[in-house]
Structure formats: C-alpha cells, structure tokens
Image (tube, rainbow, N blue to C red):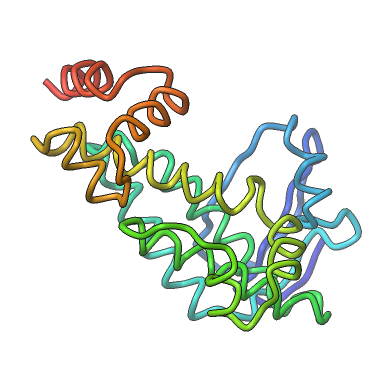
Amino acid sequence: MYHFKGPAVITQWPSVEMDYGPTESWEELYIIYSPSLLNSFLEQNYFNRLRPIWEIKQSNTVRSLLKSFSTLANDIESINNCDRLDRLAERLIMESIIGAQGTDEDSYQHTILEISEHLEDNLNSNFEIEALAKQYNLSPATFRRHWSKHMKASPASYFMSLKISEASRLLVETDKKVYEIAESLAFNDPLYFSRKFKQCTGKTARQYRILHQKDLL
C-alpha cells in the first residue's frame, strides 16, 4: 500500500495490480498507453521503475493543462482532437516530472516544454533553430541535446507535424482554399506544402478534405 499526498502521478505497469488511495473520494485522470511504448518511455526518462509515484510540484500549471485536456476531451465533434489530446497528455507528464527529481535537468526540461508550447502558438512562422535557441538563452547544440532527451521527434519534424495537424483541421472545418491554408502556416510555396501534406498524411489536401468532411455529415 502506497501513502502519498496529492496531487500526484501514479504509474501502473502492465499486468501489475495497484493498491493505493485515501479513504475519502478523489478525482483521477487515466492516461493509458500501449505496453509496447514502455521501453521508449523509460529511455526518455518519463518514468522510473524505482519511483512509481511522485507528487506534482507545479500543481497550478498542471491544473491549467488538465482544464484544457477536459475541454478537448468533451469536444467530440472535432476530429483532430486526438492529436491534440496526445500532445497535452505528453505535456502533463513532462510538467508533473518537473521538480520531482530535484536535479539540474529540471530547468532544461521546463525550457523544452516552454519551447514546444511556443511552437504550437506560432504555426504562422518559420522554424529557425539558432534564433529559437537564442530566444531561450541556449546554444543550438545545448538546445538539440536537451530536446532529443525529452521529445520523440526532432524540432523541425515536431514543428512540421504541428503545421500539418493544423492544416488538416482547417481543411475540414473551414472553406479556405489550399493555397490560403498554406500561406497562413508560413508555407511560401503551395506546391511544397502539398508535397509535405501528402507525405505526412498519405493523401492530397483535396482528398483529405473530401474524405473527412464527408465524415462530419
């Protein structure tokens, strides 16, 4: 039986039963991943087998993220919410870890989280790793090193995936022309946007729009 003070994160390993919790009622959010991802999470230092439970230090930030998570989860009409929920879940995990380990890595981890949020909020810009690193008082080499520790994709790939996700949403939820969507996401060449979109989704922008707008009918 584990004893701890909430709010806290409780990890439950595949096929391992858990016995925990207070005697009074409380709220829980379950984030469930496939067991096949376990080794990847361990390599990225998301979880530690020797520390199955940790208290959340940045509770105000986590509560704000939880509110956003709840809002998205209840909006079942948007077909792109799955990707957004996945990114929010990852941010929740990262934010909960900050301060829990008490190491110098915490400040870098928090900075990487801030940078990922900055990229999400600036999809109408171009990615320049040197300028972004300088903005957060990091050298490009330090930025790349710590980013790779905490994120699954390279900075450029991550930023591109965000842009393609937003383009997918705009194709389905708006009547904007493809070139207008490309321009709004800082693609100067519509043909390049079209190639990247098909590379990432397996469909042309027109095919994607027809397929998913039909799903909304």
